[in-house]
Amino acid sequence: MLLTFSRLIVLLCAFFAEYCYAQKPAGDLYGEQLIHEPAYEREPIEKQPLPGGRWYRDTQAIMGTEVSIELWHKNTVHAEQAIKAVMAEMRRIDGWLGYGRTSEVTHLNQLAGSQAVKVTSELFQLIKRAIYYSEISDGAFDITFAGAGKHYDYRLGVLPNETTLVASLAAINYRHLQLNEALLTIGYAHPGVNIDLGGIAKGYAVDNAIAMLKQRGITSAIVSAGGDSRMIGDKQGKPWIVGIRSPRAAAATAQVPIAIPLSDTAISTSGDYERYFERDGVRYHHIINPKTGDSARQLQSVSIIGDKAIDTDALSTTVFVLGLEKGMALINQLKEYDAVAIDAKGNIFYSDGLAKP
Ligand code: ADP
Ligand code: MG
Image (cartoon, rainbow, N blue to C red; front, side, top):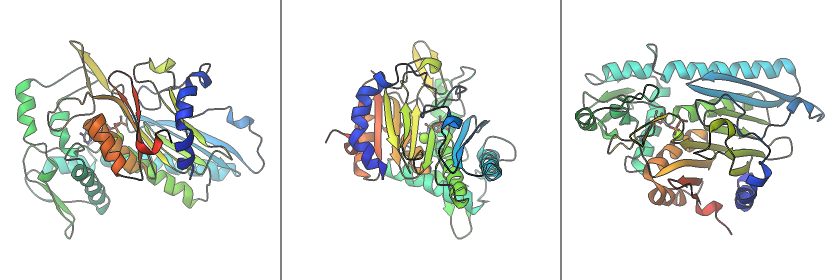
């Protein structure tokens, strides 16, 4: 509902947010360095004496990022139980899809190159959704990017040499994934295939968290996992204000050049400032163009607004890889989503739904 509202005033906000936020330290909602304030509006919440409840919040390091929950509740025990249940769900997804030994994705990557592997229907559906985004983006979003991605280490500043990179490209193609829905099996048509669900898993986790909170009757909440956020309702009568940070500002002092008022919706941001290192003046970061195996460099940041975080998450990565022209064309075609993109020079662009009336 407030998406329409946001469409009307987002530009206004963009122009005046610099002024509005001038005195406010904004956090890095979107990076693993996030240890500060999330970028959504943060008032001293316990001091809001609204009748019938109060705000509860928690932040934990899970899924290689910061997971935070803020919810309105009138019962402390139930609020704390809800937060605990959501954090447990985040941990479950981290263990299930992450890089550890117990991960179903790890298991698949180890075996599916030589045989079809039976998977849970949950993983099957998630991979199907990922493939849908490959199909609508001509392979810009592709979970098999990991064939090249696994050769980078952004913490240690490691990148593959040319030979390794070129060899890895043969294993990158979502069409290598052979899905049998009747048997719930997945096989890899090429032995070198590796999948990584990092471009969609956090959004999925946020959606699950939101479903759990709704089931518990919660009507006002925000859940974020790194750059993926989704809200239930509004912030007790006001929209949630979600900030998009300036990609080149230092995280701790990052200005929020764009502030978007939202409710009952999801927003995801992909940026090249989250996991990266620089070598010879070139930035190597964690969003990979599957066609080249190299980082996508047309844009610095992409935010997508839509109903569900699984979709905004996948689409933010997709548009980041597609670049400004193709990315915006895709979003303008998908009427239920909007985008804000920041290009390599720091210019800000909006999809049609957010553009000036
Ligand atoms: P973050 O994980 O930082 O929130 P994004 O949603 O932007 O970020 O997704 C980036 C992650 O997506 C990478 O860390 C990687 O796991 C995965 N990824 C990178 N390139 C691609 C791609 N072309 N297609 C699908 N997933 C990708
Ligand atoms: Mg994403």
